[in-house]
Length: 193
Image (cartoon, rainbow, N blue to C red; front, side, top):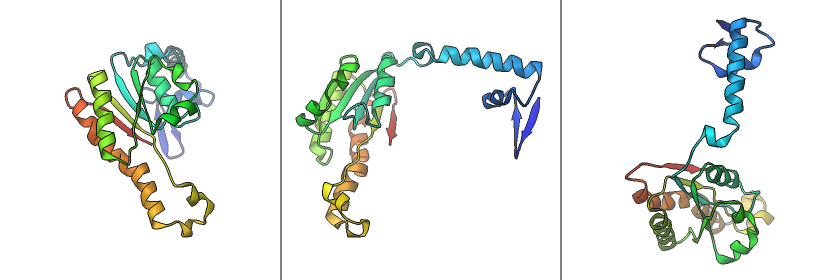
C-alpha cells in the first residue's frame, strides 16, 4: 500500500513515519501497522528494553550542569547501564556542578585542560585504565575568551579566535587521539557537538 505525499511516496510496509498520517489513510492494513507501531513505541519508552548500554563506557566532556548540551547524553547512557567519566577543566568546576554528578551511578570525574596535550593524554590514560576500554567519546566543549563577547565580531582579536578554535575544535582531535588506544580492540563511537 502506498500513498503519495507531495513528492514522496509512503510505503506502509517500510516506513514508520507513514503511520502518523493514519487520519488521511483509512485502511485496515495501515491501522494494524499503526497499532503495532504504537505498541513498539510504548516498549521503547522503557529505556532498558530499548537500548542496553550495560558493559559500555563513555567519556563525556563539557558537562557543567543539567543545562549543558552533553548532560542528556551522559544521563541517557548512564540510565542505560553505561559507566560514565565526566571531564572537567579544573577542580573549581567540580563545585559549580553541584549535585549533577550525583544523578549518575558512581561517575569518574577527571580534570583536564584540553589546551594541553599532556593533560589530554593523562586524562585519557586515567579513564582508559579505570574502565579497561572506552566505547564512547562525547565531545561537547566550547570556549571563547569573555572579552570576545563584549566586541563586535569584526573586532575579535586573532589570538582570541585561535584560543577559541583550539579549545572548541582542535580538542576533538586531541581527545580522539587519546581515546583511540582504548577503542582499538572493540571499536567505539566519537560524537562531536
